[in-house]
Image (cartoon, rainbow, N blue to C red; front, side, top):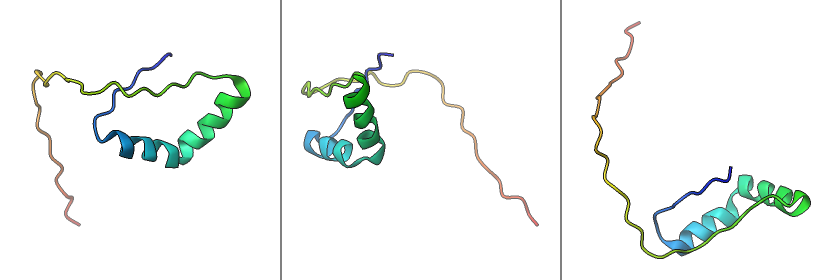
Length: 65
């Protein structure tokens, strides 16, 4: 920690999803009780780099019974 997460999507829907998340609601209890860190900022448009690594394609094959 600290962790920084950049989310891509509609800001309003992202905020709603955070507020509705049971995991986030539980974490917010710890934020308030123990003073843990929590900050959400809307930074406007972001540019994320494209993936430049190799792509190893894998597939699953069902086992015949």
